[in-house]
Length: 193
Image (cartoon, one colour):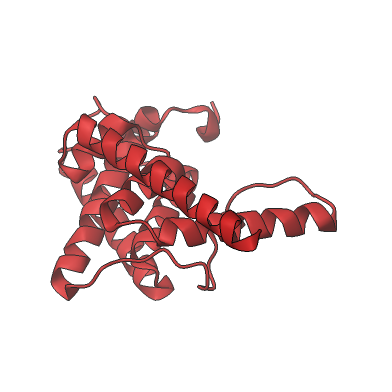
């Protein structure tokens, strides 16, 4: 059976049985989402790369010590580790994260997009830039939920567990984020008319 056809759990079991290529497949399967979510929090390429490496070192250590619980999904577990390492970094440096569209890395670079004509590409670029700009302007708690939900593809239950708030709080933050984005869009439309 090919490694690509194995589930995350089967890859972990294979890795623990001595097949390092199984872990390589697991890493390749999830690295884009994990790295992107780290980058969106820290907004610094070298720092994101360092935290990304720390996340996988911690994952390997946890797997080798037999402390990984197969009940949850691997990606959500890895995302929780990444999130906690980002939070630890900010606690140590006492600064806030900001999603900024001016950085050299772009979340949309890692998304697969079919070839479009130049006009469609320009429209998409402008739309993505506007969305990133609006997300940047949200309060930190709302911005965090938007990033975890839409970029890290986490459920509200997972977001609530990760951020240590109730599901209702996570849902409320998303609701207010959407309300705030809608207000910002309406205000910009009123200014341009």
